[in-house]
Image (tube, rainbow, N blue to C red; front, side):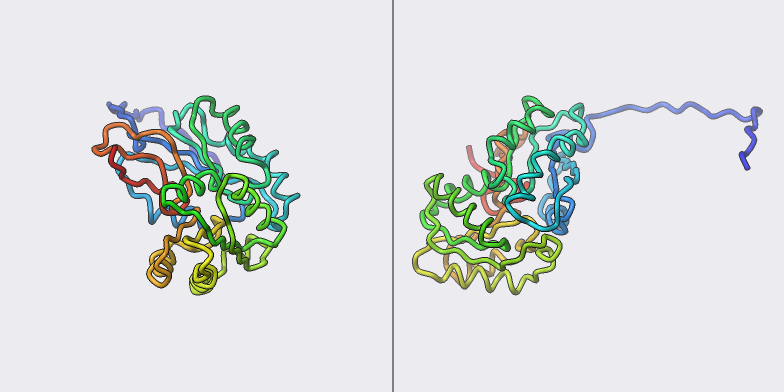
Length: 266
């Protein structure tokens, strides 16, 4: 039953003022896979920066990870990017899939996002990982992934083409992203140690935003005595400055691959 309006009552018009909103220093867009169970939760713990707002959009994807299913995500990227309104005035936008960026290609991902958000710097975990490894001075990287060999070897080849030697590779051989999100931290730590203790590598990179590796990094580094990084803390390279910070907050993750901001001296 529709309630009757009492025309004898009035609604007082209240005065208000506006400001720049919660993202007054920077607004960051992030395209997260539909099946990802980890990234947003880890970001909430890692990113608590006054004036920086993070806006997520979910990207349709197949739970089974293969070169073919990853390639199909190129069709979904524009749809997901449109869900984050260009009128927000993003400082940067990221596509949160290391394996997807490997198969689709970093340049193509950037071109797709630029069509929806022209002029906005964009990144992805693979591009960011390369920047992070360079910042760490890594020359011989041990690679840990959850993927099947076809995807893992494609990533290894991508790093090699970029001049990054990957002599040691280990994988969980899991093609279901929903299961990847359930791999426990102890298993991830053990994997990092198994790969990292090989004398052929001087550092370790843990790939996949679904892996719960945030609390593993420090322990792995302590046991190995080598730098360990991952896409969810150091891989996101956001190439513009957030204005008004001293020293400037650079949108660059140097020790993981979410949109973790590191204070860097200029």
